[in-house]
Length: 263
Ligand SMILES: [Fe+2]
Image 1 (tube, rainbow, N blue to C red):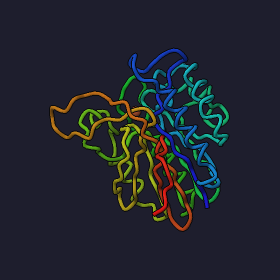
Image 2: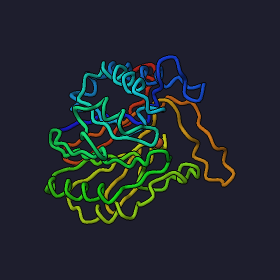
Image 3: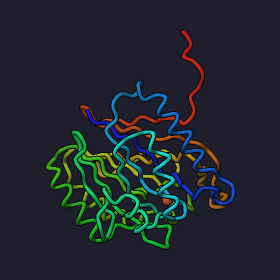
Image 4: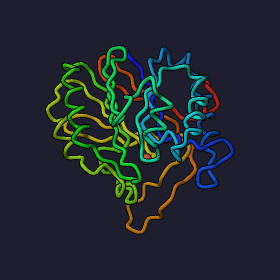
């Protein structure tokens, strides 16, 4: 069995700052880490922490150092991919042991029984994401290397439209190209992402794609053309992906309710 804890879109800013002058993203992440630490015995062994982008809100070296300090209590090997708020080189410097020394931040690792693949969709200076031809070739090679073994594939921008207009406007530009690569893969494959600060589950050429919530904020699911553009504060937890006889995804909320009470 292999278990990956998946946190996304933490949007950490340097100490003393708030996101948009309002949102205490570091406090929200600290709350989630405390919640996870309190249920580690219940969850059982965890093999690694995957963070699917927007670790930082401003791409600063200070924000990455603060992020690392905030997740340090989890004491897990940490695998990161960039989101549109991240900056490639400060992120590379902060996670030098796990990221390529130059170029795109694509990587592939064997973790327990699965192949964990991370793809870099960042187009610096833009909210939207794209998979460059180098990225797609990297993915093709990594899937070949997996040889039919279970694959957990992570990218920041969802490979599906989410229905929230202002987020789809900054979505993945070439979803069809990703579909073309994945359509040929016959092994067990789960695609995971972030960006939209909502948990959604979509089909993708015969596989399942799941977006993670964010520990600090969310966007209303409002399909109306005149929907308000903005975020809501919401500590919305994270996900746990388990591979055993198949993939299974569990939602972890940031706040525990009271109980248990007898039936
Ligand atoms: Fe994002």
